[in-house]
Image (cartoon, rainbow, N blue to C red; front, side, top):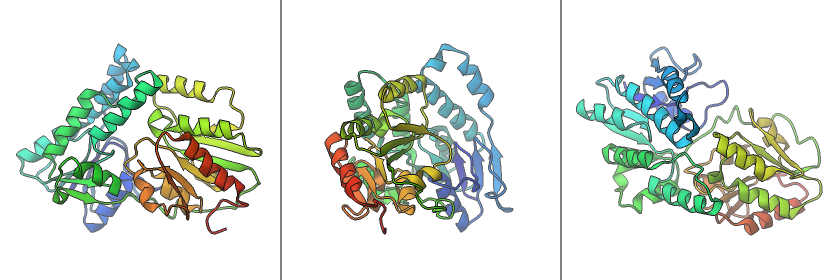
Length: 352
């Protein structure tokens, strides 16, 4: 059986998306063996599948009692290393082995000893591109804010070397690998998908308020500070900005609170995004780098127009000027222009 190593859990109850959806697609071809950090629910694991859950929480908690808990980079590295370490001890002599970048090195070393095929699932643009963009933004913001440290970057580069095949979700991600000399035969394009039955309209928009929506992790790499600035400068009557997501660190939380302080008509939320999609007028995805951006196909499913940056993998789904617009990164004026375009329309939803 193919072996699939995944840091999260697998369940269809809350709608499969991203890597979970990829696992489901691969599982339709043949029974698989899943090794995950979180639970795999009965609605996912068929009778012929095998499932093993790794409980790394006690070890993570031990590190969380040390001063390392204040460093998001350090804790991300530790959590990835713990999963990779224990998962590598679960590798069996069955090919191929699927693992996600950043937590695949030890898994792949074990697989190589056993002579197994190693398939790496890319969860970002090529890591050198990500590193460059992070460093640029850190200089702009004036502090170190992100998850990616030099140890993790070097580890991912070594995973690239060991992988027989790298699975990428978008043409953009593919380009960032080929421009660094990766042969096409080592890359496979498999676009991320969402659960169309879960993300579908249940009710019509309830009022006339023009709502700009962002859905994703609240972090500078998503470019939301450019969106907040654009929305504030537009100062549109009867409008609202919804920032749907959560922060991962105390530093990011402090940055975010300062960003939205004294800002009228800005709402924060997290949880089930379906209500937000139904009541929104346009989705803005201003990411500095995103190898896909699942909020984009989700919004399109609800008939929302989307404004995305050129560094968003899901721009493949956008027909510029038809169901949305593609804009440069860090371009507040472009965000303002496109939001204003949809604000002037009677109903921004495509097809209405």
